[in-house]
Image (cartoon, rainbow, N blue to C red):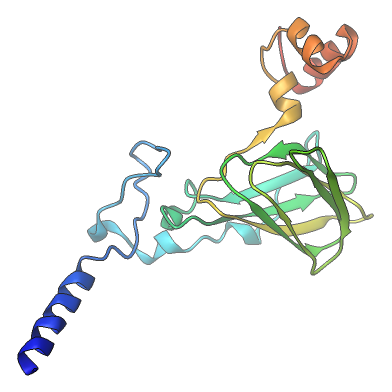
Length: 208
């Protein structure tokens, strides 16, 4: 019996000794769909597991009057392989995060200050919109179009978490009007007239 227990303990500890606790990102290596390669454990420090940027207000002096401060794997290498990340959202009065999607993650938004009108559109084109106040949380399922708008007279602040270390981002307005997609194609696929398309391209820096 003691012999069996001894063998069991050897198997237990040897199997657990091979478990890899973490894979801190080697940001000098390639970013692949599976994430970054691991930094050598000898080079890992506690700073790889700490990010202090969310305590700093973002710069909202831009066209959308909003700022997102990411704590994704590129800024926070300790997240690599863990399937989580975070960000800070600052919305100045009249600020907006336009319709966008995160192809790689679901999103959870927690309002810290102010009021935010937020919503998403399902693949069946059903609309879910709610005015959120301090302390409210709203979830946006992975890949669905969603938005946030400041719904008060003061700056709104939220912390956002994602179900991926690198959730990805595509903003619809920028995808259509901030690149060189030819205007005739934009007009055909959006039913907007030529003058409106050119106006939006001029605002967002697009060509074509």
